[in-house]
Image (cartoon, rainbow, N blue to C red):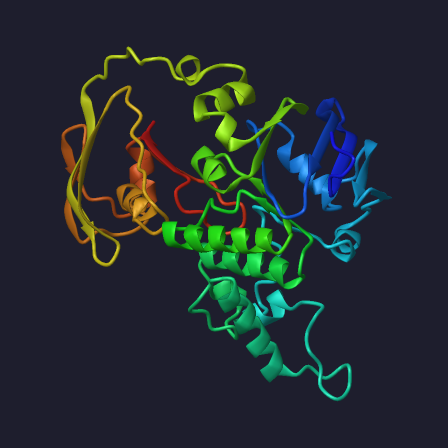
Length: 354
């Protein structure tokens, strides 16, 4: 590990009772680079960056910035050092406007310190959003009225407004559309060119290979190694992460599906989706895949009776059904499960017969 690294974390350990989240992890990164941190769930990625951001206290180890030891005791202390983090769980205040969230603690004042210059504040927030490539916002809008992807963009803008020396992005693309993701990548490259260190955590390896200068792999709370994207392919990176190849993780399926139990023909909901058709056999797992806003959630809700559909047919075990309410679907053996970290995260729906 080079002594010249802008950021060095040495011997970082953290346990939660009987669970050892990190074991003497050494990590280094340079100013002006995008450094991805990857690993399976539970590998210790989020714990490592939360220690750096002052959100979690380390049990052992030290952090050095520009060769000087620092003690990051809280997120406020991290901000003073120029370290900002954007987590999967938003830190926005829902009833406050976009402007107030982005400029929290930095609101421009008038002739007296306690008087907010709202015109300047709105203009400054708008400038920040447009400068980083996020357009079309009314900055006076309360954050609670925004979609989840737009809340994510405001969260990122809030961090960038602090002019970070280190920006931590923990699964930032989970709720972004393809165009929004392109804007995020442009922002990341812009920050890198301004000598900001960007730490990027993601399970989406295609993103990691596209945006990262270096990749550090964690497994079971331990450092596996650091590589450059040009030196490795996706299969070898997966093997570093899980200890097995992709073929070993997902062997060929040999199950024989049973009889058809769900049939959907030309299902439509005005303004959401049109003419969706598929079938599901007993013993099958059917995935609904698409970008944010593509209609996956709405299809699942219509199948479950949570929302009405405007056209099409649903057959369950050969019988035509018109779900009017979730209670009726539950009686037929269907379940709908949503995972919502803060607000609804599109695409995390599971639908299947009981």
